[in-house]
Every structure is written in C-alpha cells, then in structure tokens.
Length: 59
Image 1 (cartoon, rainbow, N blue to C red):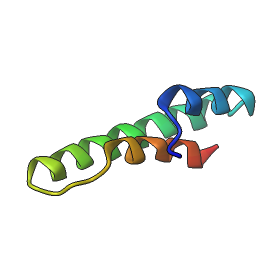
Image 2 (image 1 turned 90 degrees about the vertical axis):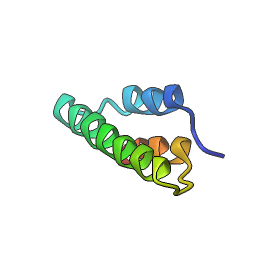
Image 3 (image 1 turned 120 degrees about the vertical axis):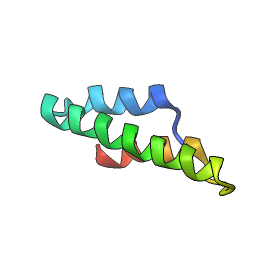
Image 4 (image 1 turned 135 degrees about the vertical axis):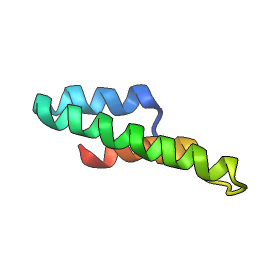
C-alpha cells in the first residue's frame, strides 16, 4: 500500500521531525515530483503517488 499524502504528514507530526528536516523533505519531494511529471510528459510511466510517498521514507 502506498501511503497517501496526509498519512505522510501524520507520520511527520507523530515523530516530531525537526522543522529543517520537514522543509528539506518538502523541497526534495517537490523536485522529485517535478522530475517525475517531466519524465511522464516525455513518455515514461512513473507512478506519481509512489514518488510522492517517498517523503514518508524520510520519517
């Protein structure tokens, strides 16, 4: 099961991540999503939900 965005945010709150780590996680996720969308636009078939769920792996 791929965790939804809100589930990831719940984990971040639950484990009280430091604010600078939360900011870093958001920036990395934004960059990953940008790249994934560009790749999909060029014919690739990346799972956007899975790319976004990567933020949970940082908790």
